[in-house]
Amino acid sequence: MTETETETDTAQEPDTSPAETETETGPAEDSLVTQGDVAADYLEALLDIADLDGDIVIDVENDRASVAIVEAEPGELSTLVGDDGEVLNALQDLTRLAVARETGNRSRLMLDIAGFREAQRERLRQIGSDAVNEAKETQQAVRLAAMNSFERKVIHDVAADAGLSSESEGSEPNRYVVISISE
Amino acid sequence: MLADALEHLVRGIVDNPDDVAVKNREHRRGVTLKVRVNPSDMGRVIGRAGRTATALRTVVSALAGRDNVRVDFVDTASR
Image (tube, rainbow over all chains, first blue to last red; front, side, top):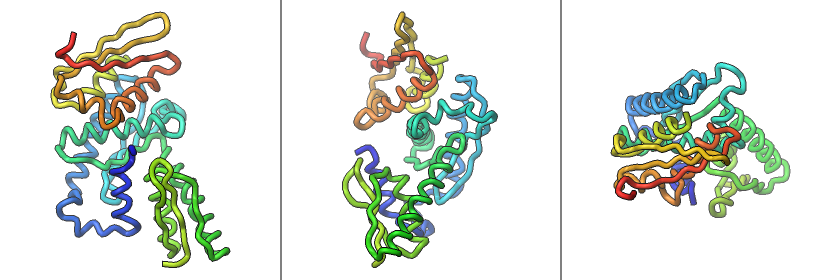
């Protein structure tokens, strides 16, 4: 229920989403940079208030603004990540709202803190490629555990790269990916 | 620090940042932060299915560490 909008995004960009054609919905590069700047200001001020050290890195990736807070000392920002990235996800929600308030447009900005998402992505890629191998070996569809939209997107990408097809099935919060051999 | 952090987070997401005020009340078992916002911003701060209020509470609790924090939202029209 909480991820419905993000899930729509996922459904619209299964693997190689041609963003060039999205003149109306696809944000221009400079507006993504603006999103990153607004987000960085919002987060920087929070770090100051909380007396935490971190370098903020702004980038544009796959048609989204991405903002990463990099730790100065290992573990310094672990409170802002939380168990399973719970605090990170909350901060990402708030940052998207702050960007939307400032720019007037909804934002799909991705926030990472202390490399958490990158590590999570790596772990998911491994799960995805294990499932791809299993599907190829058994010539049968492989059903994965329930995941959120971000996690499913990583799996879809791995399956597409391996030339297999994948679908999300079930409803939130129990949506899961099925990887299959056939088209 | 907690009240300042919460005030900053809320001010960034509302239409009337100047109407945001956070009061800090400490008691034996922890802290209660009372957030006042313009009535027209109440929906923003609560969010769909309470999602934004939950996000604010999650971040503030994380910053508080082991201390117990309660966050209440009220609009400036109420006393």
